[in-house]
Length: 173
Image (tube, rainbow, N blue to C red; front, side, top):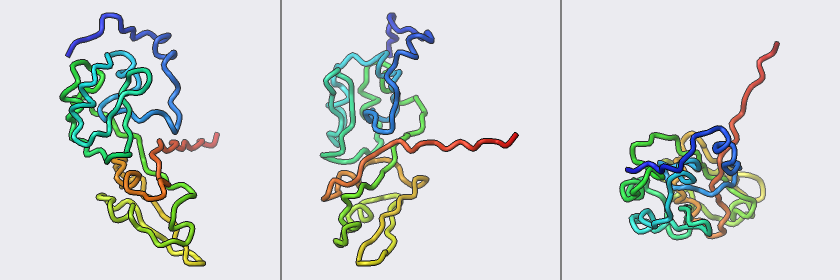
């Protein structure tokens, strides 16, 4: 893999990267915003290598994941196809994305639906019965792989992937 001679690891370059929000663009596994910004050439090798066809290039010619056509299997085909260090199979980073159920969930509306629970391979989604025939979907974020299978299968499109906020405890003085 080649290094970009124009890449700057300076503090200024780092601070000029886009801020990551809970709803930031979902980049391919084994990549970071910094690696995409520094090394991605927009060659589309990752998009053609993805067997699930969930990687596309955004307006800035940078790879993003969309779960409209499937889920991520974390196969690393995109990383193996990447000719630069933008997506690197050797990069061991924690996948930060987790499923989050929105209010449009059919079970929350009293309509029987368990599609997301059925497709969730790690069994991170469960339902708690509530009054009035409604059910509350519960997601175990420790079990959720962030693959997007639930988001892909949801008939109400009520599941999105977000980055859970990390909670820090204040230590009393």
